[in-house]
Image 1 (cartoon, helix red, strand yellow):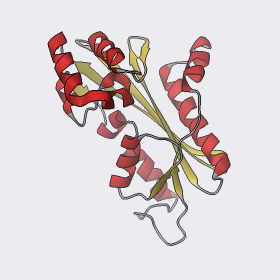
Image 2 (cartoon, rainbow, N blue to C red):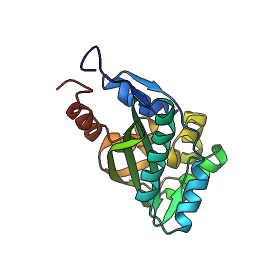
Image 3 (tube, one colour):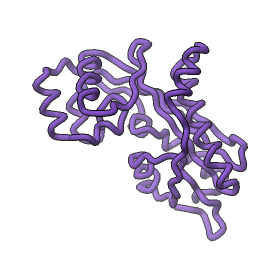
Image 4 (cartoon, rainbow, N blue to C red):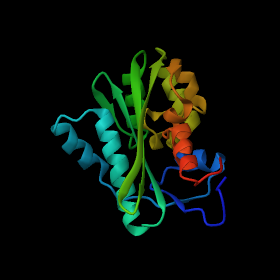
Length: 204
């Protein structure tokens, strides 16, 4: 919970329902203000410069937070981004179910890494950043399983990289998961709460 009457406003620079839910379920009062960052252009540009997935995730998180901070300079603005890297191939959110099916077919039976970055910006200054990684191995499921899974979950999978939600039916896609659950959901919550506590934004 917030620490007092004059606690600073917390703004999430994202339209992500899952990130907002993680923060609100942890007792934080937040405002969601989506940033208008051209993520594909940033990824393409940084990859051409030789940046790795962690650098790209951090850069995108920072860009989102900085953009929103210009409109809300007094707030503590949280920016976050997540990259899925499978042996050097980056997977984005699938634009439709056909692409989701192709992503799952490519990832099955293989191990991939989720890299999640978060930053906190106030008045244009980056006060904190954190990068965490999780390693996930998909089991070698059948084409029929993919079809049944996508029919059950529908278009909601298009809102996640890799076309899965581990907190739901997506758990059935995996044989092994190593890493922090919140990192997999797209936000390294516990380190973030530690930062907010240290700045008196949430109660000790």
